[in-house]
Image (cartoon, rainbow, N blue to C red):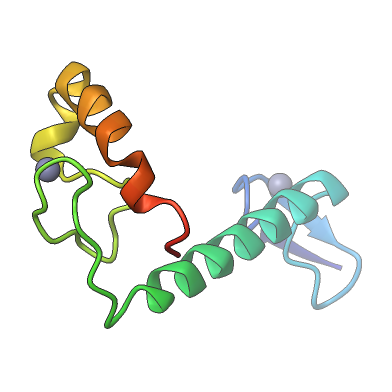
Length: 96
Ligand SMILES: [Zn+2]
Ligand SMILES: [Zn+2]
């Protein structure tokens, strides 16, 4: 038995098993879920490398870390963007 800090919630707990790093099943599941989500996000970002993604409103190149179809400038001005998106929807369909 060993006192440890949970890697998820940082609570101190007594580990029954030497490899136990979470204080509870809840913490372990929460951590696992986040890891899966993180990996998914990384794959998503990696898949964007080499792709020429452009803002659907103004055509500026988008960062691979940008989850949106719009650049930061256009995100600030959503009403015009919605209009532009409607116009561009036909063009965008069928692509990636
Ligand atoms: Zn915990
Ligand atoms: Zn833009």
